Length: 76
Image (cartoon, rainbow, N blue to C red):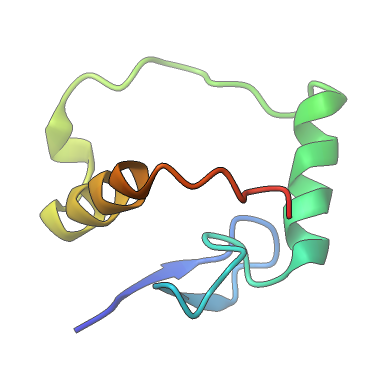
C-alpha cells in the first residue's frame, strides 16, 4: 500500500511514489511556494529530530530508496 502524505503547502493528499514527481508536494506550484517561504526565512526548523520514531518505517524506506537512486531531480 502506498504511503499517502499531505502536501505541506495546500494540505491535499499526495501519494509518495514515483508517480508523484513533486512529492511531498502536490504540484510544482506548491513546491515553489514552499521554497519561497524558506528563502524569506518564514519557515524554520524549530527543534532537532530526537529519534527515528518520528518517522514511519515505510517513510524511512521510501527516503532510503530515493537516496539510493542518487537522482538529483528535485528542481526539474
